[in-house]
Length: 85
Image (tube, rainbow, N blue to C red):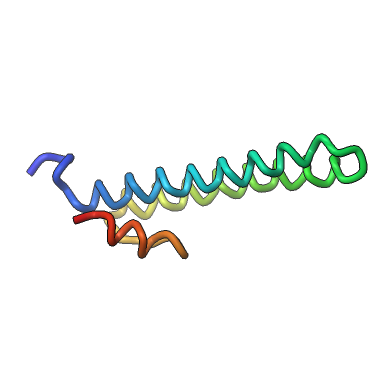
């Protein structure tokens, strides 16, 4: 069985892609709000915090996949599981 046919690899790859898209969407929204003068500083801090937390979560998911565990991310894990046939 090649890696392209392995459900485990497909599951973790799609979950990573979905989390990246959701994270980039959240980062884009915070980035747009960062240009407002009154709360811009707060949004910039939230942006940096979100980027750091997403990086840590990505490392955690990478660790789980490397260990061979079927870790499902909250909210999107079930959706990803239904997409992999």
